[in-house]
Length: 203
Image (tube, rainbow, N blue to C red):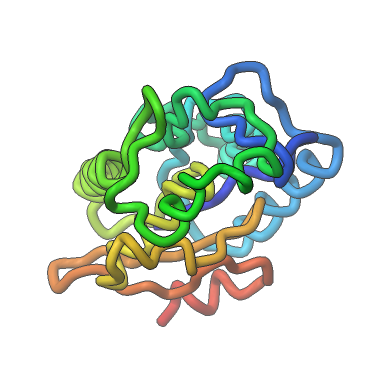
């Protein structure tokens, strides 16, 4: 499975957008999405493309799907974390909140005000990915999601405690490759921005 973080928006890195509607890719983000599709074309076969319902994810998934003559399917479980009352807040304001330390150091015990907890998000993402893997045994598929959902998926695949998942970097338009099999997951690449996909998946 190839986990793709959506490409850049006008507010990436400055605002916590969460599930607020209407946030689209920037011009640079559209270029990044096309570049992701170009990298994917190196693969011999891609069976399916799934995407978070958020516009920025769907716009990242679209060129990948087109490259293989597929239609990107919206999968609700791939959506961004529900940040509740923090949705749309500027990150520089959130950094000053005492609760921000818990987000970084003790996420397993934190729930966003009127939103989702990190354990709930990890369970949701793990369940969704498990269903997609079961739907496509032995096949290569793409799931376009968001930074935190991909980070918690990687942490789970590595056996890393949830409280350490913030140490995993997942940049916009990066690709993370995880092979799910009967003996458990194998993490092939994390936060990849290069042209190494075909070589990785041939191992």
